[in-house]
Length: 469
Image: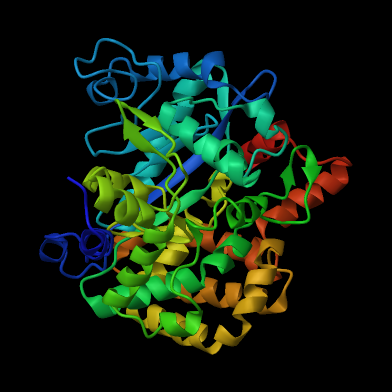
């Protein structure tokens, strides 16, 4: 049944901007919220350090990984009866907890934890799954490289590894816009921190505003992608640069200028988010059991208003859910906040973004402090947007990064002890002393190593750097 505009707004408000999961506050009355983590990596051949393609060994290695495990074998490459391998991997459930593994269009491997009651559990789950996958892949002579972007393989060289019709539609759509959508699909890797909205609308509104304001600061702080196509770029986070021009209708910030963000309530946030969804271009629609690009091109709102009202062939609720899943703002609303602005990090530092942002958004004292700080810096928002891809070179951005780190680190230590450990605090402090305190980001380390080498770093260099640390 074709949906209406009112149903779009209702869906965004009730589903995408929903408060904390039902029952969480009853089970964990003194805990501030759930935590999930997602991590992407590039598979490489450990003999040649060339990127491993899906058809060149990765698929077979993952099929073997799925054998002997009821959860993996009932998903991933298998159909409903668990016997006939499919051509492409669907999200693979890894264990009884519901953690998943999937593949990005360029063959990047993604591990996603479920929402855990607290940060320590999410971090432990990510570490456990990552070790199990890495151990198995090593048996097939495959290793993983953690970087914000593939430093050496071009878009044509990588190709569309996972050629599902859905990805074919995305590839074609982004190709019509420019180069960056295909770069996003094939070259980039991120680490995402997923946090819920809290128990009341006041906390929800403040968490979303603070998360969005500091998202470019996070990109700068954790910038880890200065090389691409075998060359050094002018950016410390080329992955961040890619997302600027993937598709302006579905990326970027929501809600106008930041002064208004700190006055917005739940209704205001869901309204501006729904408007962005309404205005976003339609990438694909399902016809005859396959995904196809719309002809002619149109926004989702045009599809609802013009096509749906006149012909009755407008989008249904499943099309609305798909459209929401293809919206990529800096902080994506999915019934929780998906913090999407961080480059993938070396394994040593992978717990740091979650430690800082959980402390920043879940401790109310830290949240209030960061809200006041952001309000006082709205006048330099233009400078922040112009400078964050250069890491912490700007004194304004470096100052905000230092404040965010200090406040977040102090905040997480005021949470229940299930949100931090001695190891996680020491790791965060080590990152701070190595980078943020010195107004540096991980990309600066990579650039320094490249300077000593006399050439841009490649996948082999990044893999060896990860092993050293």
